[in-house]
Image 1: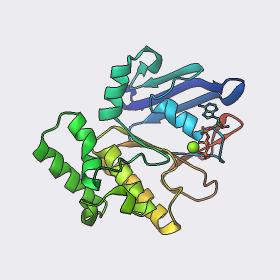
Image 2: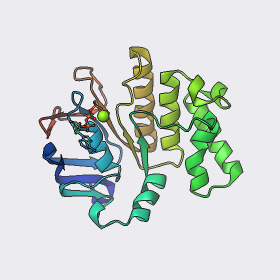
Image 3: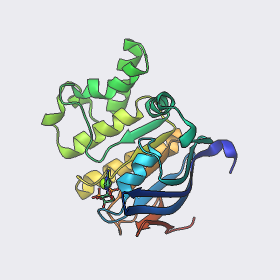
Length: 227
Ligand SMILES: Nc1ncnc2c1ncn2[C@@H]1O[C@H](COP(=O)(O)OP(=O)(O)OP(=O)(O)O)[C@@H](O)[C@H]1O
Ligand SMILES: [Mg+2]
């Protein structure tokens, strides 16, 4: 694997909140085009790891490198710019803006990145078609089902064509059919656009054939399968 394909490198990452140790010496390498699942029960530290990888928090110990650069050496505006353009985040509880329509929610990161209106609209409708949600463009988040909200949150994370997508429990509020649909879409983005996808899940047993599976327990991250 060439170094330029390396997205994340976590080296002995530990995280504590006061005296509560959540992550202990976590090591993980993620390359362009990888699809990684991090499985673990509620409360084991999945969101903590997601927030560290999403540059929203620093580890208590150890280091996180993103595109070869140590997160501890990045300024806040550099992190914000990476989150806007290179690192798409899908939060566990969606974080859609209630006063904006679906199309406006998806478009927002492009507007923040200074992309012109026409190009924004084209990209938003391209994604709506890709995710089969064209009919929802003018609806507001509160009128959407959980599965639809989940797909809107994924579209918003992808709109600026990031190199990495981090998704915290993207299937937790979905039934089996919608879970399979969303995973299929993530897999397609990973395969067709070489986006590195890292998702967390509390589903310990479901077989995701395309994923490299990791398991988080007692603060430690263990690799489950080798391809
Ligand atoms: N800001 C914080 N301050 C104190 N404790 C925290 C904080 N954030 C998380 N924790 C604790 O760290 C542990 C891991 O939390 P985290 O949210 O990472 O778990 P999780 O695996 O995402 O759980 P879930 O599947 O329920 O979302 C929990 O015991 C939680 O209470
Ligand atoms: Mg969580």
